[in-house]
Image (tube, rainbow, N blue to C red; front, top):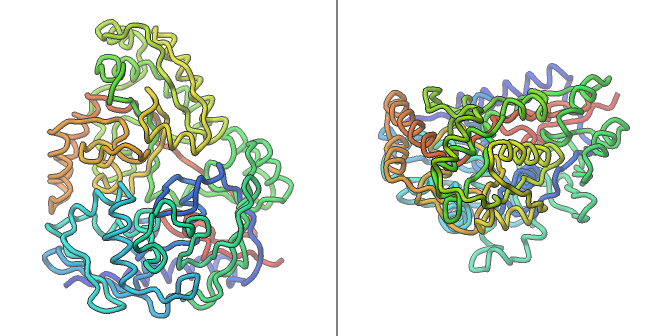
Length: 520
């Protein structure tokens, strides 16, 4: 039996001690004003996994574990865990005295309901990982046992709050999940409780006075300010109305000016678990993008170096593979996808393209994304492909993407530290399901790819997994089910009197319980 908690708990305590030493002891109290961009479509994390939803709801909901910046697991709702020697049984011991925000006790029954019932139905990414799970049982109120069908090395990485949020059984069991009234007033176990949401203005969270960790959170309240205009967000930070700009809050061209201000700190940490990778979905369900030669033409038409330098101010790296270069098992030895207009025209001539206008669906996350869609339209025009931009808000983007109502659709998804957790879901045919913008939206089907992803997930050595993932990367890149764009970087910008806002591998998405504001 392997017991992993002693070392990871020590690491977590050391991290907290380092932060306290660097800034003095944590100070209780204070109001934090942060930007949320764009406004989330919902805060019910079990139903919606948009980036803005995860950022706010990660303070309300919790999972069994958190992860440090080296992706080592740390305690959260589970205070201890063991793994059997055969790698098949994971036993978690829950924290004592945990209450839901309505003061109902949190027990192992909530874990079984959340994972085995609610999230199996609602969460496409987790559902793919749960295919490896044979049973989830609760021998007593503080113990949960996951029994796997076969060893699954990345399994300890699925217990992050955006992947496996705990859902209150007493509120959701036997209800219509999507229409449960509690979706509007989310109830979790986290350090902050939902208070109010003034649509178009702000979301207000308040300190959970009954939080199970004594003394935490330090902050009294958080206001997530909704400021639709990027320039106004930058001005709000400059004038002191805003204390925290999460990654992606301001346009890239404003970052150098803001970070040069007095009493302003910034960090690129807090994205290690996510490894955000952007691409354009190519709709292979029907229509022009079912033509592989047209997909190759689009891929070679894209000037991604220009996008990196001119639109993202160098904050990123051109993507070459379905696996990010910061994620395990990346392989650079894949077919060429570089910008080459002549090659794009050759593939276009070999395709059945008849001059149809392709519908480009931008990601409605600000001016940079809109300008990127315009640059793509220009790139396509230069090689003879007609296109138009279809603008939406976040809810409209969710709907159109999930309904496959586009030809080329911008997105970025998280990789979660391992291809089995965050990459395979985009390309395996078993994860095609209309209605979700976070699964195999393109409709890509390749039985060999399905087989390789399945085999790689259960191998017991890193060498065996690397061999299989190298094979799958070559095949997928050649098939071009999506147009890979960039490995994104999102600096978090904050006032230096806000201490320790980024202390896990998902940054401000779950780290604000350990943040504090100095009084001097």
